Amino acid sequence: MTFRTNPHSIRGSIAPLITPFTEDGAVDHESLTNLVNWQLANGTHGLSIGGSTGEPSSQSIDERFAAIKTVIEAGAGRAPVVAGTGSAKLDETIELTGRAVDAGIDASLIITPYYARPTQEALYVWYKTIAAEFPDLPILAYNVPVRTAVDIAPETIARLYRDVDNFVGVKETTKDFEHFSRVLQLCGKELIVWSGIELLCLPLLALGGIGFLSATANIAPAAHAKMYELWEAGDIEGAREIHYGLHPLVDLLFVETNPAPSKWVLEQRGLIRSGFVRPPLITPTDGGLSKIQAYLEQGADYLTPVGEFNIGGK
Image (cartoon, rainbow, N blue to C red; front, top):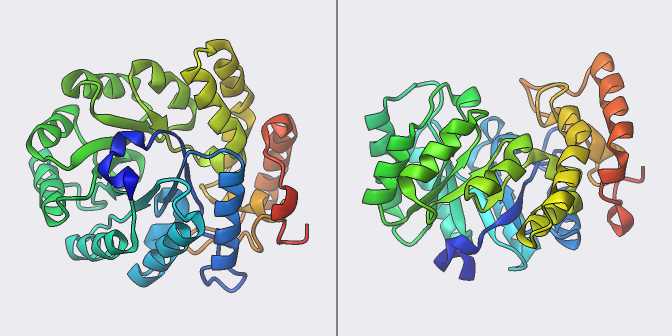
């Protein structure tokens, strides 16, 4: 748990993993283990499970915890594990976070409570309450207003960072780039800021972010890791080339609701056994598949080879 005591070491490309399901809808732990090993073999700097790409709202607390445990065990300390342990309910959030802490996570990503649309004061109390339950765990807010209908204001992030010792950062999944800038301006460079918007991963590094959770890393982990490494080495042109090269794969992911397109690609490539998504999501429609296949051709040079990790027989 070295990363837990030094959360600033959790940087670079942190893959927000899908949660594979079997054809009948059960969590497929064998496929999940395969994905972890494939990610780490291709340079991914960190692993995250339980974010939006992992379909957490369609799973029980037990299922979510089992998936977190599988990622920790498969990772075997080779990379930090950041778990999405938030829920719309406080008791569920505290229960899942506690179980994940005991299992060995390095940090927790807590989504803003969805549907209720709490005020900024309510968000402050929410995060402060959760952080107080786990004083030795790095806590990061997961700000994703497109899914939760509430945006954490930069001033609220700054207040939490100032008042709560183990509130260490935020995953910003907003296309408002000014928002990123104001968060960093108010909090300073010691605040951990990760991008959750695929096409803002590279630009955020210029403002002082230290990493990103891009859903595109589910199908192109090597390219994402290389983009960060080139930036760190000062090869801005090389990093920019990858950024633009990844555009078709980013567009692929959002032809229909994420993660249905990426799961289809992973199944087709043999990395998971089934592309099943749980209701209310559906697998890609025929019209969607034609677009996905076109984008797949355009971005083929940036896909990461499957190699020995083919378990699906494709």
